[in-house]
Length: 404
Length: 135
Image (cartoon, helix red, strand yellow):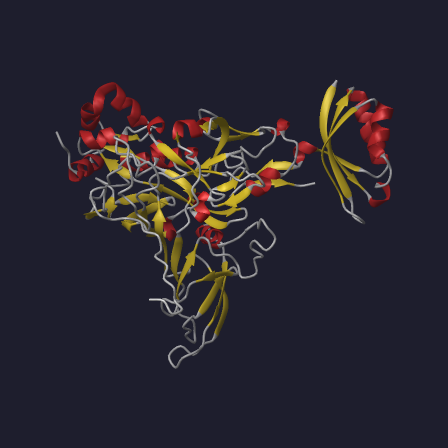
């Protein structure tokens, strides 16, 4: 008997809702079947916690006296984009201070960047705002140097254009000479290590692989507070090859997510330093999946042994699109065991996405729903899925000098 | 027999003296140098594991300290800031002695203090910079 989101919300209101995590549903479906599971359980909660570049926050810090239309701005020395209006800024996770030596002494440390600014703001710390302007009749002021704080901001909105990647690569280094420093971490030469970055069986979009419930307007756990899915993410790529169970064989769907930074918590928005690469922001994100029917229930029962990550070379293959020997794929069950078989040898594995934190998010969201603090929303529009013509294209570069 | 991992901080005036060599001969200790750094005109330090009779070890420490060498147990030097660790496991493939391992049940990263040799590799690998080393 199919359910509706409204019926589930009525059960949340009356305290009768049945919620399990995306880990707990696995055994239930295995033992009782998807049909029974969909009858018994109303909501499956998911979670993921890892470095998510393409994250940032919109801040409105209020008008100064006299007024200023900010042209360039820095938060704790980290550049923020000011080309929105007068006192609106966008601080992005990967921005680094102008004074950072970056990779001029390789590999750079990247101890502080936009992700850390966001974490400091959420932690309630004072952040130094410096700004310059060219001055206008209506906004005459040309300089600003002051402290801001989350409490003093008018709006502070986390706005992440690409989070919650549905699956991702398993990164290795086919090079022979040295370790390489990537956004997937530090990779040892000669496939000496393999890094992965997905919550696998707990990950939101891997539990709803065709985006049958998660869409625009889906209320989610975001950074320890409540947020919403506000668009498909950038580089959304739903038409990639899939296994029979619907699981994508590599990176696919993504989400744009938005939420009030003022409700969020610093333990769920963590600035990170990726050596030789730069800074980023670890984002905690969890989506509820309403078990509207048996098919949806069956999909949430996906487990790590059924999800594969394509092994990808980050020395030449990824950066230069060079052809590499086929590296195959590995399951998240292998990856999480500490070693995976790649090119016939056992390779030690390490994650960038925290499985224990993903679990904590799924448990927290479960608790919120069970105690009536979190109600489900119905998507107002579904994301482009496998049957769409939506693709992720490379840049078609065109010559600019005398070319067409 | 007991094993201790210790850090020796050498003052400039002792840099030319074969302190460790004298120490292991006099006090019948085995040594394994885990890390060493000596810069011209600066203090140097050595992280080493000393194995031998407990009483000999105690006397050896007294002797090196009488030379102006500051000593401390290694375990005090490598620390994990618990609230910063996100248990992502990015460190585990880089630790040369498996002092950072993922618990198969909790999926949390355990820091096995006793196994740590203080190499410091984890410090710069850790994305949230939860590992700290102080000599």
